Image (cartoon, rainbow, N blue to C red; front, side, top):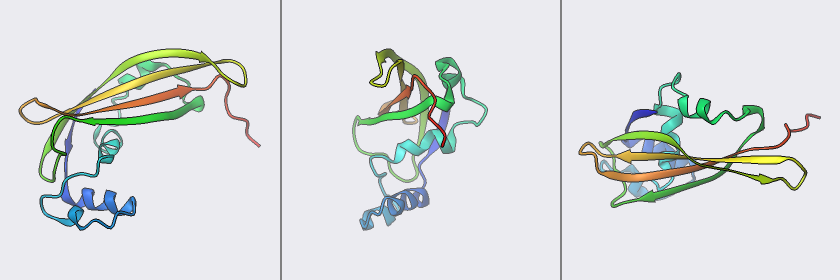
Length: 138
């Protein structure tokens, strides 16, 4: 799955405020993104019908948990006015016995963010977990 991520000043400010940041640097015209800002990219910028990676994963969404989020930057943080090009692919997959019985399935989604010249700016690694059993509803 590939999509563009415009880095907008207002969205940087909104994200920083929602995270309770008091840093005035996020209000500047050339504001850089907070380090976890790119977590919003897929939800806001990926085409809604393009869930190929999740379809490929084959997890039962009723048993899906978010396990971990990791970001790696390869230079300066992106700033307002830039447009990044994102591509998400399925990374490693593994299984492990759950503490309450049953097999838990793990998968890592890897999203690369590149600038207009194609240089790698950041990489996001998301670990998803499919539990062995659906949650109990009370």
